[in-house]
Length: 311
Length: 325
Image 1 (tube, rainbow over the protein chains, first blue to last red):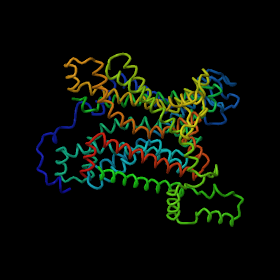
Image 2: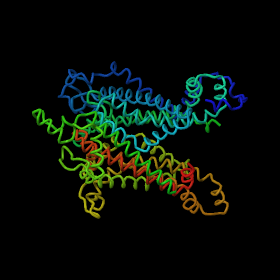
Image 3: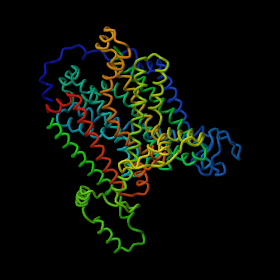
Image 4: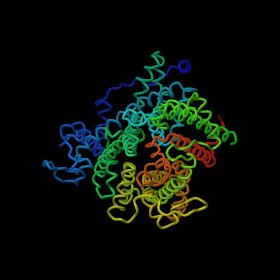
């Protein structure tokens, strides 16, 4: 604390600039996203998937996990087939006679919940670690960054594999594994931008106001580190969803009681060689649309929030 | 340079030690291996004997010490399921994984670099846009799903290529390899393409960015002013300056290709290390899990060490930074 205090009082004007604008910053970014053709496509894709997965219980023709509604005689019907009760399976059925369309919507829910919650937890932990690292400097910084470097030198899938081999299956365990594999990216991003912000004069100004450290870090430095953090978070969210699907496909992610898209694809794997393509194809397409959508939004955000593009 | 090497080697040993403690304590403390080893009908006396025979009554640090000294002597324990030394099992599966990983990496380089150079030289052409769309798709497509779709299309529908296994292998310097027989090659094509796809996208993007950056340099303008042919500018000036940093990145990617081979091996029943670990996790084969994790950590630490050293050889700035501390 003593080192910045000894600096001369900063007199630059940027510390006193008014914050308010015509739009809130989030609205400005959103409007810019809508103007970008690709990002708009991404927003629409993700928006549609988000809405249908939220209202899934009210729009699906059958509850795919209520065994009373399933009939094994409807098993492995191709898309467009009719069940004995007259229901049409638009995307076909899996081996248990489960309507794939319903199963995909429920799987989408699980994938989104796991992906979003792990990304959110990793973001909070990673951002905190990055901020502490940048603000404290010295030995704390060195230790945190060594851990980050060590972790990033191992591929995410490998760390997740090690953790899940030890912990076993379960929704809490896969979220933990995803958090552990992702936090380091956030920590590095935030540290990078916080180091830049740390040297700005407005930080010296709030230090002179003798505000508590936590307030300086969280209400002054953090908001200015958000743009790169948001871009990284979007990309990481897409990656987390894909990683969860991969781990569930390998049979070490989610248990069969909580089927995500990856598990649905994995179920279809057994029947692929006998030509029943639809059980794996459609859940994969849903996953693909979701991930492409998020990546398109991420690309758009990067162009908008990158200072080099703002001029 | 020597100081840097020593420091870097020390870090590797430290990483290895930390990871081995974490993995060992994790594997042995969270689950109880006794339940897997001993049948439910065993008498309490038999139970005690087995626990003592495996040293499981010792405190965890003693157990770790035994494990550490044994593994330094090359003994990583016996697999419960195969009843063979775990190390031997893993080493016998390693060539298959390495062959797959190298093929994928070679494919990524030979497909990715030309496409990336083209997209960088003519960014406005329709073909370049198609290449970039392909690379976005390559990033977003889950590897395992693409693998399934490849099997569906080329093995099930068209019947052109086999869907699983390694095919016929021949010994090359005492190591079985697939790529020297027609049958083995046919088995190798789909898994290699599958594993390479993500890396192809990555290489395309990196190459394109490098070429675009390079084209704005003064020396390219100078070369043009001198009246050099386009071919000479591209192949001598642009490529040389783009490829050197790229090769380092691709070297780093070898590790991640080996890690991702787990997925491809599961899809194509490729008999490599990844398939082995997934089966071991399913069977709760603890010694094998532990041995695999230790070997993979060792492998990665070594790859990272080699890449770092190569990097400091290629780029003197890294060496300076290392020496000044």
